Structures are given as structure tokens and as C-alpha cells.
Length: 160
Image (cartoon, rainbow, N blue to C red; front, top):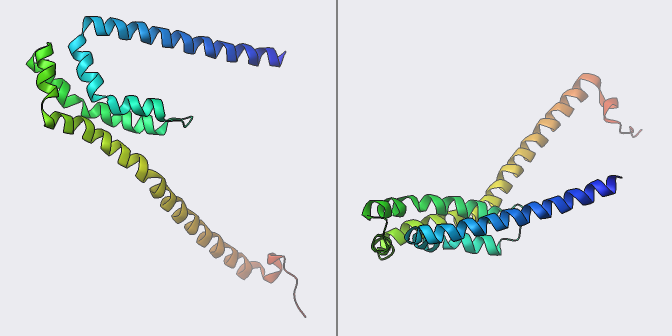
């Protein structure tokens, strides 16, 4: 009985993924048809995130999350200029020929890479510091217990 429920839930997850993929494809096609200049700017600017989406193999996709959010933040200025210059191919070209806009888009993605690469060593330092502090606290507590209750609390045999 439980096996059937698990099999149904796995099948249901695959069906949901297929539906989401199909909906994204249809929505993307409609967006390309309706707003081609916007799609050109987004495709050019979000290229690092698209590459991270394809290459990130971790189940929780930390690289994609970090890089994608910062890459999206870096798209704010170029998209603002794009909307101000007109929602046309010429407006998209004005954004894409400006090297400073590329610096904004890809620089933010580079910051995402730096954060992704710097966090594991940083987390290691924090975990080691917390473990060392806990070890000191436990030693102080054990010394206090020995002082209060005597050496019998340690469980060690006395050597006579």
C-alpha cells in the first residue's frame, strides 16, 4: 500500500515537472513573439545564469541561486535604460553596445561567483570557531563539576 503511494507521488512529481516545462516553453515563446527586444536584452544579460542552470549539478543548485539572484540584480540598470530608450530593437542595441551595461550585468554575476566560492571557507571558519568555543565551555564545566563533586565524577579509576 505504501509503495503504491510513493510510486504515485513520484509519478505525480514527474507529471508536474513536465507541465511546468511545457508552460515555461509556451510562455517563453509568447514572450519572444510579443517582446523580442526585451528577450534579446534578457538573453544577453542573463547568459551567466543560463550557463549556471545547465552546469550546476548540486541537488540544491547553490551556484544557480547565488549567481542568478545577483545576475538579475545586475540587470536592473540595463533594463531601466532599455525601457527609457524605447521598447524597440534600437533601444536594445543601445543597451547592448554600451560596455558599462555589460560590466553591470556580468560584474554582478562575477560577484555571485565570488560569493559562491568564498562561502564554504568562511562557513568552515565559523563552524571551527563555534566548535572551539563549545570545547572550552565543556572543559570549564567539567572542571567545575570535578571541583564540586570530586574526582569520582570523572569515571576514571584511581591509581594506588
